[in-house]
Length: 248
Image (cartoon, rainbow, N blue to C red; front, side, top):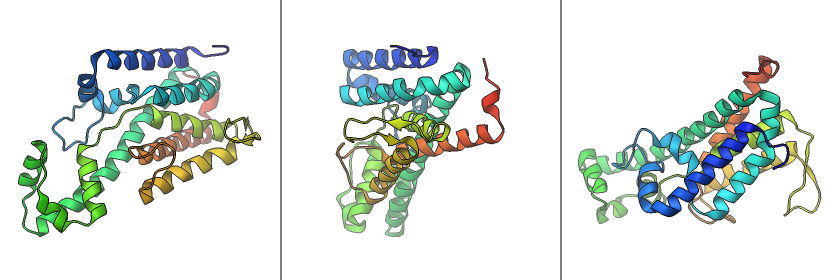
């Protein structure tokens, strides 16, 4: 790992250890460490942090760790280790916040419709926490309302993708003219063109509910949330010339 910085190296090791550990432990690790919806009985206060170090499969962790290695060291060289770690965790938490906020909107929209139709919220939550559904809900909600309602409540989130999107956006912000050589694009493309396009695709897929190469189950709004926090933090630091004041 040529030119890899210390904090990036430690993050790579931690993510790999978590991945190996989940292979050994199985579903119990995901039950405890993945991020659940706050209204779900499976939610625990540590999950906004631990979900960042969990991954759903080999290709998931491979792409995230490759991006961390490719872009993270440049930022750590520039900012220092403590500042980079703060940035990484902040983007991951920001991704979780945006993802959960969108899910809460979908969830509350469906709850309001059901309550207006005569259901009580406490009874709805009781049924959901028992792992059941009421077939009448499908009759009262639109197809998209129902799908968003159930997926918001029952879905879990794992992965460092939110933090990684923050890193990629920060890299493009700090080094906009850096040319990226990508496997699926035959010519190098500058970061200032590629990264906004990547985030725009995620935003479109999140709003439209469509899927691309990854298929269903991709937390597009978590990606957008990580990118947004990465941009805001980078902009704030640059605006206040924090880049000249390393934390270590």
